[in-house]
Image (cartoon, rainbow, N blue to C red):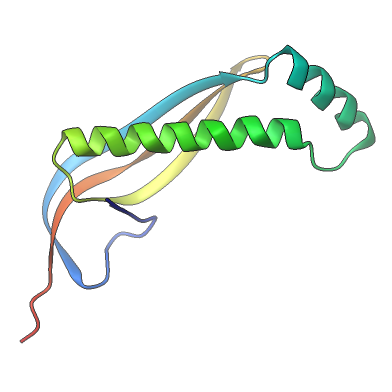
Length: 109
């Protein structure tokens, strides 16, 4: 599956737009990571415990988006983006989304 943040793919033409695809994950930091991260936030700098949770959430949301696109019969996803919203203290929704399309190689003349 080709995934790009762009609106096109070099060497391919879009033959059908299938619609928006998405993957949604809701994650919390967990007590242990929350305590360690909270203590590290006092001194400043990168908080690797939080970064690990965020990266895992992005990966999981991305995988779900790919699964959604495959179910629709897509060959690629264009204009892929991430969004995140904290809706409870310590719990964040991570959304990966884009436009599912069918593509074919551009024929050279």
